Amino acid sequence: MNLQCRTELATNYKSGAQIARVLTEEWAARELYCPAFDSDRLSPSRANTPAIDFECPACTQPFQLKSLRNWNPRKVVDAGYDAMIRAIRADRVPNLLVLQYSSGWIIRNLMLIPRVFFSESAIEKRKTAWRRGPKGGMDRLQHSSKPDCRGRQDRNDLRGIARIGRKGSR
Image (cartoon, rainbow, N blue to C red; front, top):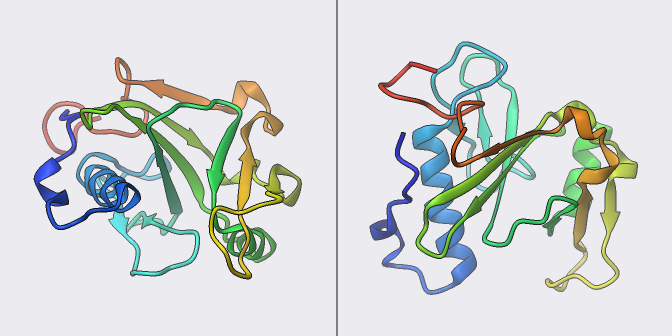
């Protein structure tokens, strides 16, 4: 498994957030597979699909990737409060992939939180969003799900949902 992001893909971007999105989404598309079905990859969703970044091509399970440099095991900061609430109410909330990368763009941690652990009470609307506009911001409260149900994977053991060895092996 290659834990290094392909930094050459970021040469046309200036914003740190855009660079992180491009590099980590490419890494996830290249290295992750569906933990719920026998599919050796996750497919990127259509551009601008609210709250969903990837889908399993076989079972259509949705996934959202949240990438961050600083690991916070209690909260995941996000900007799409309204989109996530709509997804929860429509029973279309995605599985959450929380990915931590180093300053050298090496994947350090990966955690999967299955979609069944998200409810409206697990989503907290922030008082001040980093973005202006009607959507507002949110924090997902990971500590509100049962601790024994969180499957944290660190860089020494990414076997949970990432490829190990040759293509197709797990």
